[in-house]
Amino acid sequence: MDKKTAKRMLFNVLVFLALIVATFWFVFKDQDISKIFDITKDANPYFLLLGIFFMLMYFAMEAINIKSILKSFGNKLSFLKAYKFTMIGFFFAAVTPSATGGQPIEVYYMSKEKIPGAHGALALLVQVCGIQVATMILGTVSMALNTNLLTGPVLWLSIIGFAINGIALVAMLICIFNNKFTRKLVHGFLNVLQHVGMKKISEKRESIDKSLDQYADGAKYMKDHKKEFFMAMVRVFIQFCFYFSVPFCIYKAFGLEGMGFFQIFALQAILFMATSALPLPGAIGASESVFLSLFGLAFGAGEMLQSAMLLNRSITFYLFVVVTLFVVFINIVRIKNRKAEK
Image (cartoon, rainbow, N blue to C red; front, side, top):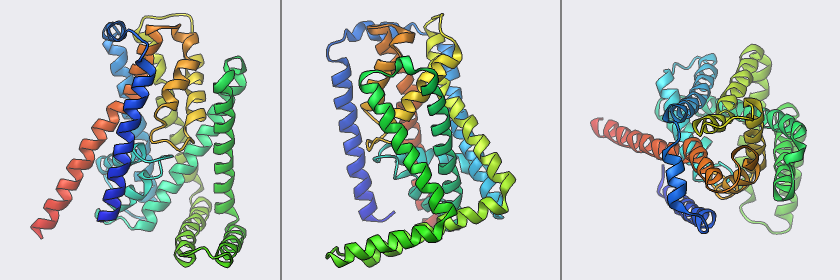
């Protein structure tokens, strides 16, 4: 990682920390913190551990996907190394807007393990395609079955999230399956920008062409490896089923009854749909606010709802930001030691 990238990442981390402080101040400023922590402390630890296990399986399914896709190219990669790449990607995605920093860093560290950059980028393209498909299908079905919950700001965030994710999926599919048309369209747009005096167009053109080449490779991969591509999509669906199941673990940890697994699963799917496309690191602020708006039906109002949000967000995000930070640090130290030994 060069100094420019490192400085950009440091800036993103500082913004990330500032957003966390602002979010928790806004959410808890009028709440009785002692009551919230008392409720949190009394939660059944076994269900909380189950939620953490679901998150570990969330990472595991992505690791299996990366390992399997890279294997189809003839790359040998252990499950543990694939798991490491997944966790590194999670950290850098968490601290960058719209999770844009995760994949380039994963490809970079894959190259350190002698995985060709083109293969690593294609494996992650398939994964991202699966995420968009899973988000749209699970989110849309959940929204359709729970229209009574979509009111006020949650309704608008859900519509915006649906629109952005839908546009992203359609754009991705067009880039993959109609690459020539996309290339002509993009080049025409860049020519207009160059004509009006925009600078560094040639550099942008080169970068975009490289991305479009990856999409073309993605189309070829999907045609040549239909079974593997289908299984990759299935694994992404299973991955997000683990993720969307965590709030139910929180629900049961509080000893609550009345709502079924699929109802709470749907609430989390709607939350993810509504916030995942927002240009905020880790959707900080938005995820917490939407949780409080959506999950009142499950946890009621007041301190229990606040505690549920704190536990759910800690298990699905904050805990693993800390864990993956250690993975990143250990990986950097190992690479430096490896260089020193040469």
